[in-house]
Image (cartoon, rainbow, N blue to C red; front, side, top):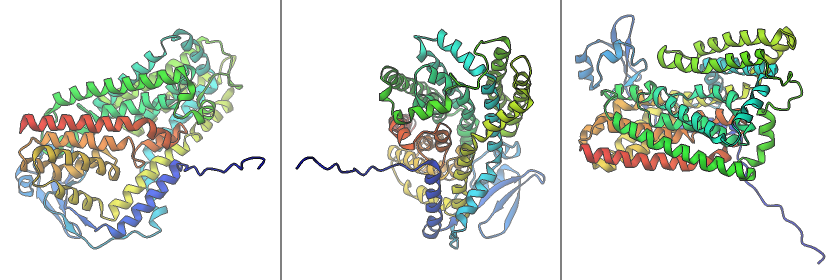
Length: 516
């Protein structure tokens, strides 16, 4: 023998975001054939007629007076003011009304139909992302990013982690106070190029923004889209258990910052340590704004400073609008577009201006670069459409509630944690899962003599531990935006999932032992 023949080794390759969501859509369609169909009666408030409406599955809709006595008769322990004031706008499942229905199997046609309809339902988020992309494109074309980054990296040299620390703290606060999730997408364009210039990778970028905001949301204190609406649906005040949530949030923030410090230090000292090292060149090519051939002069002049100031102002303005003014995606998109118009004027005019065609082309190019991210959000919603129209979501909820009856307090709450972990995959919307599950799950706490707020806390920890992983949530849109492989993300995030479930279990059992 003159040599050994080399054998190719099989290597399992993780499919991309679109393929994963397509496969999950197919699985959802198949599930409608095998999972029994069923539904609870649904309660809603008819604002124009000032009445409660109860829709019986495959039956009539009953109208009731909008009074506390009507809710009491239904077994719904929620203050009527939560309905009349608009605090609860979605349908509520009525406890004890689950009934099996005729099977509603989805056809093959449901696969493309749900993908299209899910995209249509997500159009408000998609428009927001398109406007954001256009704004980014214009700012990059102005050369302000490059000039500003060169100045920033010189000033932060030797203290790079301080920026990660500050961003992570702000994201945790945003998550715990107002549930920043989809809105966090807006922060990547301004922060990712900075992280690249400081020598970090795509994992650090997602960790400091998405991971930190999600940890804050998992340990929500007054987040109206999570703990507040869940507490309302459970029939309690959201301030119940807030001291436990505050302590948990502080500990969780310390954990995620320490984890980011460990990882970022490793990457800083040895770039090959990066979990996404194989894609480093492509990532930097996509997001780095230094050394671009078509950028304007690198001198950080007054016009470029003004452009960056206007760009940065859009983000705290967005947070203020969401937290205090009730802004949603259409209003946020309009706000970003307003600033984009001013920046386009500054970029088109002046000695180094690129003209009207230049700024319009830059806006269009920036928007088109985020088409993939927008479609991911729509496709994920399509999966939920299949499950809901197949009438199997409530079946899974009813089966889950039956598992925890007649358990001891600690075992009951740990089972609840795992149930909400699974339900988080099926219903990735925090407010959606709250109004669907709390009227059913919260009363079960009464049977084991523990406060209902403990069930609300279990819902938070369980669902958000899953949302770090679930392709049906925001994860895929985030990874698509940064062109990061799902397998790389899993390698980084699994310790955080274990922490949320483990630390969350300790808090839940402690609450049960203290209050039972």
